[in-house]
Length: 402
Image (cartoon, rainbow, N blue to C red):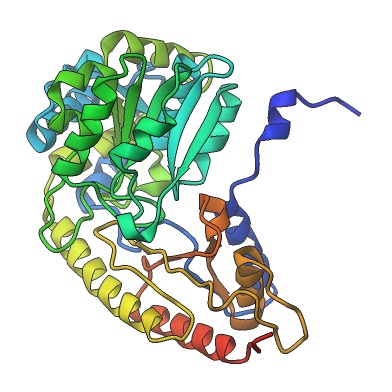
């Protein structure tokens, strides 16, 4: 048998993809499965982006491009950061990659040496720790609580920093909690970062445009301009422009670091998809009308879902600021016994049982570093969302206390 590299032993498969695969198996077997596990908008890609992709194909724009992205898209990204976030970047400070995930992967490969520490507030997006491990770094998870809206405090950050700390990961609005940092909260974190010159910050802003209740968006380098040269800001077209399958992410940061990340990309995937780059350019520069309707729809679903979950005994759900997830505590459902006599020992067992018993796919909080919680995605039509909650409520009602 061919021996595997030691690094792969440290990496876990994506929990969200595993749940999605199991749901697909059940659906193929004829089950009616409602998937609330996938972080994918249920709105269409904007017309301008779709047409730009078609035009790119028809015009023969199907060859290799510059590794870091076509110049006009890099410039559009720089313009986006300037216009939306007050960040002054040039096209040379921008890298376009095959999704936001590749931006983060390139960053870690370019920055992290063996045993360097990366501070990751929990709950966290499932891929952060394993990407750190693939770079042979050490993920340092800092547990947050509902009392702080699942956001790391300056005191927690100060306590987590050591001489080996190289990077702090901030994700706002958050996957999985939907919570967003305010400008004041980012300024307070900036005060801590400022005291530790070895520490850089990566701001994952993928859900920037999906914020509710007129809450203003703030990003770390915008609030702490003196720390801009120690900050990498990541974003993409997947969520706001409903382009998950097009796989275009982008980031901006110190030019020498962006160049190093482009070198990594050049020796791995090379350029992102040429057709998708043209579509992303149209998304960024074309009409933005559809965004407001999408955000309003998600805001209404969010309020309905939070109220519906809090009405079920044993669940406790905060109202998120943005994204399209809720992250309820379900400790009241864990430890109970199913009609088949199985005790649901943890959130992983709970989600597995709900998939089989209720036909609803959720992601256990353990995958996000938060046992005792589950993530619901409400990027699904309201009727199916309501049916999913009815099924869950009925299934939970069959559980016996032990």
